[in-house]
Image 1 (cartoon, rainbow, N blue to C red):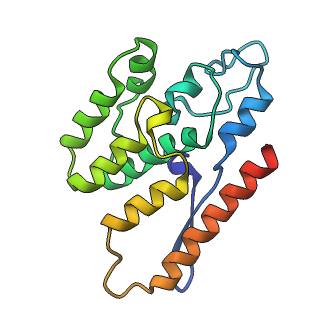
Image 2 (cartoon, rainbow, N blue to C red):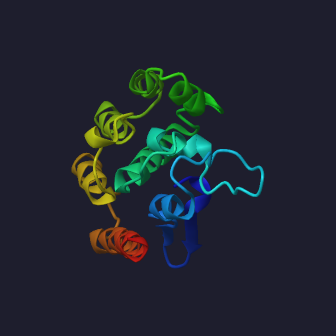
Image 3 (cartoon, helix red, strand yellow):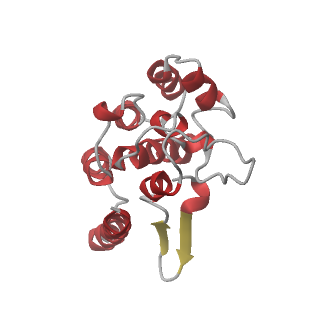
Amino acid sequence: VKPSNILLHDGPALVAKLADFGIAKAAARAIPHGADTAAIECGRILLYSPGWSAPEQLRGENVTPATDVFAFGLLIGFVLNGRSLMPSGTLMRVVAQDGDLDGTIARALANSPIAPEVAAIIARACRADADTRYQAIDDLWIALSQVIAPEPNAPEEAIEIEISEAVDVTRDTVANTA
């Protein structure tokens, strides 16, 4: 998930829909385990965006729904911060050097205008260890919805329907690639 995966529709109300959840799982099946997927050479194709990819994906390891949670966490940080939490090349460098990704994310969030309770959710979504992240987009959404209040005049049903549709698309995509 990255900014170009956000589809906007301007109708009676502005609607944002997410595309490509579950692509990590599909990509894992398309490329042999251990292949260097970060390079485009010798006929290999880049199936993810390195600046938005989870550490396990960059290392060529198995991907799970938590892989998409990582990217979505970076995306939320991007939207709320107005710029990427990880400057170009930083994510790949930190992962390649086995650096302190959690600390790097925490420092970026501390230096952003993002509210601390939301920053804590983003930090958990972007943890280096996939097992300690939210395990599904649903879990991340629930955590966010507990700390972010909708706009005063926003119809709650519309917000829930749009999020529900995005989650249903995610589930269908993952189910079809399993």
